[in-house]
Amino acid sequence: MAISAMRYLLTFEPFVANNRYIRYPLLSQGREMDKLYSSILILFGSIIKFSMGALTAIAYNLGLEGSLANIIGGIIGIVLFTYMGSFIQDYFVRKYPWYFKRRFTASNRFLVRVKQRFGLNGIALITPVILSIPVGVLVALTLTHNKKRIVVSMVFSLLFWGAIIFVPYLVWHINVVDIIRNWFE
Image (cartoon, rainbow, N blue to C red; front, side, top):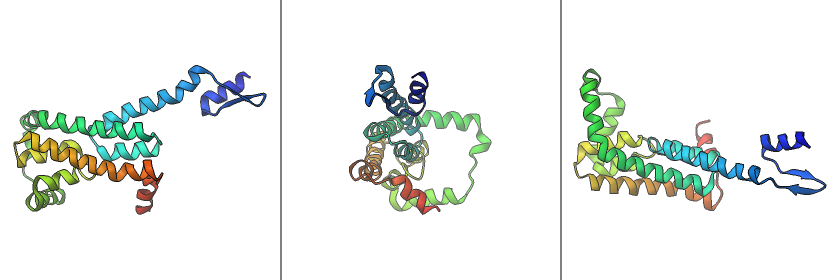
């Protein structure tokens, strides 16, 4: 019996004795606590990178809790970096002035092209999936100083990408991670 209980702890499979499931209250809470801890980690990770949090929530099959944690984390990141971004940018420019010299790389040219052609809405559209949230917000802060407009456009973009990623997963049970993994094989 002790070996079966240990197996239950390690594999989260139901423990069967005499063709009846024996439920332990602490062990049944283990799955929910794991889901809660995973959702909290996804929330904090999504503050920086939305798309990685979304793919992690789908890969670990966290369902609605994981998707909500991902979206809320992204919104927290947008608000945090919008209102603290100029202070963070000034600090790093003062601390590492040699690193912030003008260099023209392929990624810089891409960002300049998006800024010139599409403006704030273009930057907001590519921020959750291509750029990280801090980079997208800092680029948006160079376009306009209207922080409310930045937050609104970034949140709409985040919700748009959240719907594209999570609706097929939650409604139709389409594993988006496998589809993306097959694109790169």
